[in-house]
Length: 177
Ligand SMILES: Cc1cc2nc3c(=O)[nH]c(=O)nc-3n(C[C@H](O)[C@H](O)[C@H](O)COP(=O)(O)O)c2cc1C
Image 1 (cartoon, rainbow, N blue to C red):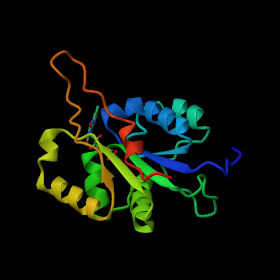
Image 2 (tube, rainbow, N blue to C red; image 1 turned 180 degrees about the vertical axis):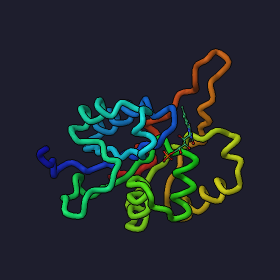
Image 3 (spheres, protein in one colour; image 1 turned 135 degrees about the vertical axis):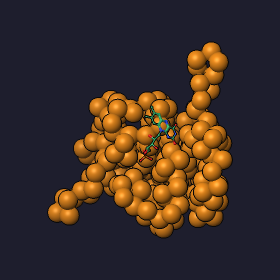
């Protein structure tokens, strides 16, 4: 795909939470705000949590999940900002601990170290969010400058629906360009 040098590049990191099925809403909003978007998904998220073919069509780029081979060129330009939506309990805790065993985590660790703006929308059940390790992870990542949206439990309501996931909030959390 031809690089659009005039547009800032946003990485959208997608984790394996049920709400990930709606990630196209975030991509649409980001594109409307002038971002070019590349999606990096965790390996578990690639297992049916969202429609990767639809996302590829929407972004015009392959969805990345695996590490490239050393000889291969980087498929995405460097990011101007990174959004993690949805962010799982697992990925938040591993990121805070400095683990980089997925491309998504490696990207997040590096972006934070480079001072690239990062906004995170967690989707974590209250029962998991109560774990002290998770609270420590949030504190640690906030201390690194990572910005978080409100807690979102993702639990079904009595009527079977779910509260809206505030996808656009991730974009609002990024500093103005
Ligand atoms: C249908 C389904 C929905 C899930 N939803 C969530 C969720 O909303 N939040 C979460 O933290 N984990 C959720 N999980 C568990 C994660 O998928 C699991 O912890 C996984 O290891 C996360 O991997 P990742 O962080 O690399 O994406 C869900 C699992 C399944 C099967």
